[in-house]
Amino acid sequence: MSLARDITTVGGGTLLSRLLGFARDAGIAALLGSGPLSEAFFAVLQVVNFFRRLLAEGALNSAFVPIWLTLRQAEDGAAHADRLTRRALLAMFCITGILALLAVLFGRFAIAVIAPGFDEWRQSFAAFLLFMAAPYIVLAGLVAVISAALNAEGRVAAVTVSTVMFNIVMVLALVVLPTEEIEPFYVAFWLAFAVSAAGLTQLVLTATTWLWTGKRWRRPHLRVPDRTRQFFARAVPSLIAAGIPQLKLIAAAAVVSSSPAALSWLYYANRLYELPLGVASIAIATVIVPRIAASLRAGDADGFTGVQSRAFEIALGLALPAAAGFALLAAPIAGGLFERGAFGPQDTAAVAAALAAICAGLPGHVLEKMFGAVSFAHDDTHTPMLAALCGLAAAIVGAVLLFPRYGHVGVAAAIAISGWVGATLLGLILYRRGWLRLDASGWRRLPRILLATIVMGAVVAYALMTGHSHFPALAASSLGRLALLIVLVTLGVATYLAALQMLGVAKLKDLISAVRTST
Image (cartoon, rainbow, N blue to C red; front, side, top):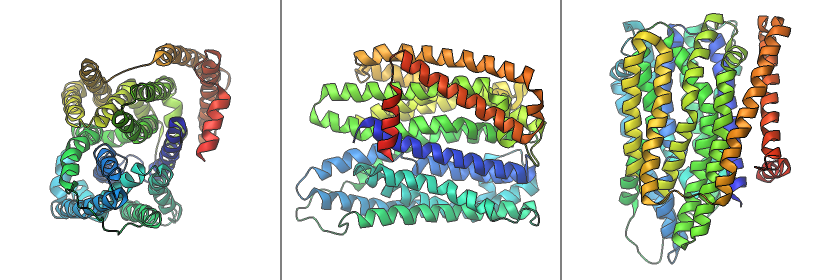
């Protein structure tokens, strides 16, 4: 299976999951708005998303896949690899079980750390919601181990479907609600329960796939040293690095929690920001680590350089136009997706301002993920962790300094700056080690991707000004705002693809072929 097809499969699934996440958040915005109930739920969702990003979206691959590949190449390798998976599942169940129990027993303390500006009522209600969602921590850990095993076997489609299922269940939970009869208090309660139900659905799907695609309970004829402890020793630094982006948001939420509605505004902006970030970083990190690891073990220097180059092109080819598009269309995006029901024009303006600030860091965050994948493939999980911690420190210091003057927008800007800090540090270290390489095609295509982004930005900016001057009535209705957004996004995508075609970066028929072969 080609690198482009694997990335298209994982990226397409991540895109679908993020779009379903938008549908979920649009429903929450309409029902809860940006008031105390939504802030309490979003504080709990910070905890859920932390473990989801940490465990269930490919972070364990970097530690699991190289060990799995080593065991798989030995005599009776399939049995050894499956034994590693079983033991990792048991250890993960114990670890996450303890964490879930601590979340239940010390829920109010956890909420006080996440949102120190909450009053007593919001803190108590958020702790109650955390009790309902705590089982997801255990479920996410088990799903993460099984997904890592499936990724190592090349079964990326099954893992992709599992990722999508979380938001499918959450959207269905909103659909079945009798919105005209139920109180907002019970909406938040129902959504917290749906989080655990979504995790259970993911576990059933991945476990069924893993059990049905091999003889998982065979005992190896030859004994080899147990590698479970080595797996967790390598996993801890990579998990810390993977959890840093969510820790940045948790730290940002703590800074803005004293300001009314700011936590909700920052959450909605970050959800929009995570669409391109997730598609680029998760897809590439999930696919490229096994590819680079296999190239290194085979001594294939050309293959190693080629995989890196294509991954760089895809990463920046997604991140640059997305950052430009979000900066230009921040207001139409926030208004078109969220402005209805309890979510008003003031909320749209606040979310748009935060989105415009945070999107400046998108290329930096994507590059940091890309550099991290390269380091993980070399069995180095400590360097990405240290670089990510430096980025976290930059985000916290920047948020504290910028919040008093610029409010939640300054905090969003601090998150953007932190992405470039982490990427710059990690990139310089890996370059000095000789681990970052580009082939001739990469050096030729990357400047052209930047030029295509500039062309797209100019076209979208002109269309946006024209639309506001000639069709002002569109902004007056929810349907009109959504229609204008769809037109502008379609125009931007079409312009960007045409520019890539004209500049010789990628042919449209090749992109269509990659999409078709991934389905």
